[in-house]
Length: 259
Image (tube, rainbow, N blue to C red; front, side):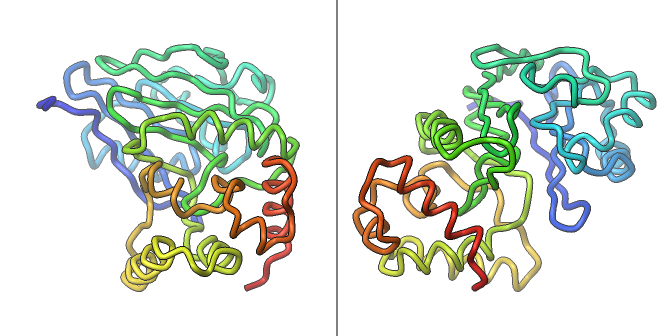
């Protein structure tokens, strides 16, 4: 076992975002995944006694890039973001696209273009560490709203993620899990793994504890947006067409859901 694994420091910020600082103990490199709250990120850096070297942006929304300029000015860090949306990433220095590799000290991350939520979303998969930062593409029991992309684009993006190892830890950007769970059980009520997961989620949230990260294997077993091939989901939502059509209807129903 690696005596110095990739360190992930997670903390809540804004109303329902998670901030993430990742740290390589050997090189001393430290990156923030997006910049939802620059002041809180600075407080966490001081608390950990780390110096910020990188900002790794997933997409352009303000709760993901809003602190870029402040942190870059204060620390001189390098800003990395999606090539497909570089014009909307404040302070961007390095542009990454599908298949590129980001070297972070001893750790390598493969970049995946994952459009759907926005046109230029990327995910960072630290494959050796079995850790991935997926922004707003995939959530615990959910996926991002299709603000700028199509159902086909988002389903393609999710399929990329589904090819990773099942033990991969999925770090998403928001604590949406309890609301996502209510929708998931509404269209797949007989899924026993989902039932058990919801019990755990409710206990976590009663104690104000996070439900993130989850493993990809858990998501594949319980997240309806990764399960359009489920005959029970297809019957529940009344769609038996292509997987894209099933996914699209599932996303549409979630957008309308008020449970």
